[in-house]
Length: 311
Image 1: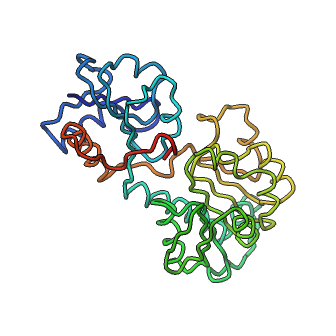
Image 2 (image 1 turned 180 degrees about the horizontal axis):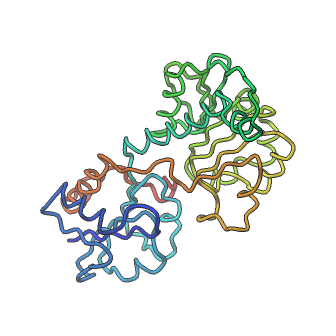
């Protein structure tokens, strides 16, 4: 009964680093990095950020894939994952707060005219601009789950007018919560900033398309810290050229890493960050170890995914 760690990509924790941190949480757990996997027949739980293509085929007794984050769409769709293998995700507090702060940072960047001041400095121009008042600014949050709800509350506490959208009804004090397709189109037309924090599901893939961009407020900013496949990227580029939206901040894109020849890199109205909005696992390390215990005790898992629904 061992946990095998396979991060699956570069630029985050290494497998050895994460194994060391997990062992510190539970020194008695059998936790192995991919560099020293031991007998693969002993592995019953696989902890991943991205699931490598052929790895499940080498783990004959695999019972659980633990995602080291929230998004599980690529694991759910993995063709090599047997139907009986369970999937769990994390709902950590620290990266949720980090994602909310990421969205706030780019809202404040616009509110305080940071890009305009940088451009003025490049021209050696002393050009005062009045910052925008929060009360006069509407921030929309698409997705009101664990991360989106936190983002909406942070924006509310910063005194912005906040509208939230979800597929099913939600209630958050001080946030105008809406749901349903018609409500989304109306919300987009009211918002100066739209923070997309939706999961990737069949219902959300390509949700932000030409029609939705046309419904946005002219000059608005789209901030995507959810999943890259929520956005129709060619439609976004065309919409940016038309000024609706006026700016896009993308922490996630359809193909990661973003290819060097992608026009998103050089478009003057696009800001790219390399999927860094939520970084640290924090207390969620305890949930990974706890699911290891629960799995082998035959008890319900934390944050188990419905493979049919995709989340």
